Length: 416
Image 1 (cartoon, rainbow, N blue to C red):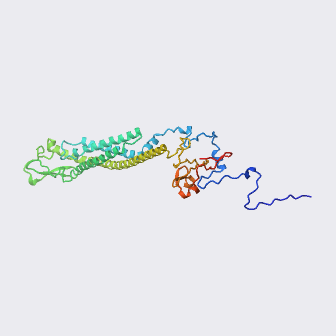
Image 2 (cartoon, rainbow, N blue to C red):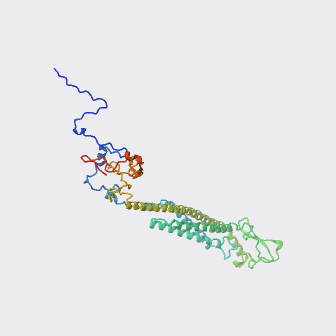
Image 3 (tube, rainbow, N blue to C red):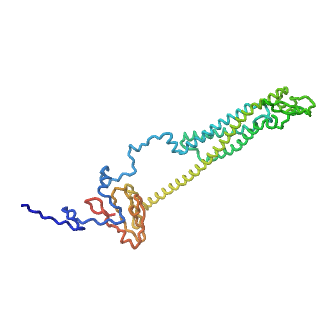
């Protein structure tokens, strides 16, 4: 015969459950004010502190920004990383300067060939003008030297040339290229105009003497042949006279002069192509130096703006140091402790997430400021003041000596 055991009725809904633990009958600690930071759960503390070594009480907590010794040693940076730190656009600038150097060398070679292969000693009826070519050699030489200086300085110092200096040099260079490019165009036009007026000379007539006239005519075999004007012939043709078109060439006879004219005509296409190449190189230098000039202006503006920001940071740091020295700001734990006097502002450092918070209170005079907790501000790690009204002082602001809740078991309340 089985004896039924008495069944215990379940507790009513909402009633506190009975517990055999004597500690459960101990009165609970006061409720934490709404403005305080919520304590993390035991599981959170266990997860956060499972790898944290236990240190004796009173030992200053380590700086959260402390880097382990193994990771403190910076890895050696490559040359590319160092150059990127100096100027993140250095590759584009190097590409532009490389094009300037290459086109400058090509242009110098073209115009140097035109100048060294000049036919005759006079510029009056020669294909290209000497005085229109040499200015371009100067602009190219200065441009190449400047680009090489910028490249070498950046590679050696890992910093660019001062943007103010670059603005000045690039401005002078692209303005100089305007002038020399126009001279190069004039030389090209002089070559292209050779022979288009009905003869190799500029006016189309060859005054071989004071009383005879004639002209060079392009024959079917693409050669220039002298043709006299029969209506004005009074004497034979004389190519050694001082009235001849090429009198400065000192030809022995007219046959030598005719050969010279046809030689210039045969060289015209090649010399025109070489001169055109030099003109294109001139305009390459003009456009690219203008691009570098605009870029240098942008770098100068960025440098000035960064300098103002750094000055503002230094000024702000000086103000903070002054406030710390005057006691307006209390340094974080582990640094010099300053006890605020009555009516003085008080700041406290909020610990990182996952650590318990020790609340500190101080009595506020009417109209003074009470400092909000991070939970009220929605942020963590900042010290922000909060204004209490004089009528709310007794309700919200605890007085001096009021016990704040403790996170340690077996210890009494802490007093600020």
